[in-house]
Amino acid sequence: MFICAGKSEQFDFAVPVGIGLIEVTMNLTKLCLSQKPEFLLFVGSAGSYGEKKIFDIVESKTACNIENSFFNAGAYTPLDNMISTAEDVSRETIINSSNYITTDESVAKHYLSKNIHLENMEYFAVLKVAEAFGIPATGIFIVTNYCNKNAHKDFMDNHKEAMERLTTYIKESK
Image 1 (cartoon, rainbow, N blue to C red):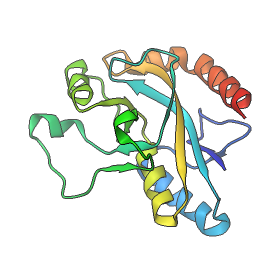
Image 2: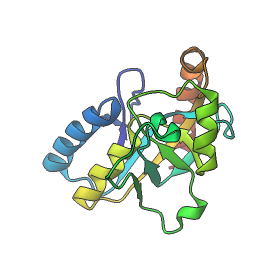
Image 3: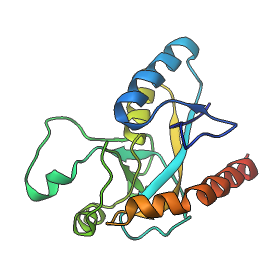
């Protein structure tokens, strides 16, 4: 089953499950309880911490949930904040999920130092729900912006073309 965030990121081939960690957790859980998909493929946009370029398309089976304050010792978590369905995590592009968009380039460099290259608000929740239901899952992302002070403007400027490119990629990959 193809799933996506929804609202401005809807695809004719994907079921929208919500924006951010909480909406996705609630809505995808309901979906899994009522339909129990055999496989989940999440499609959406992502911001780059610097190495991935605008309109790069990346497939990943690994996500984490790290807040920016972690890098200045302003926070910690007792939770396991990484999940992967990959056989070899060392080859994965790790996607960070938070309900906040990174706009500080200096913080973005900290993510890169941990081999975390992209951020998408929903993906960690997708993988956690999939794990809870024993459903294999993966994600396909297109880069719309860099995680810097222009993140929102660049996202808005690139979003339409990114969705068209991602749709073409998915339909040609079937």
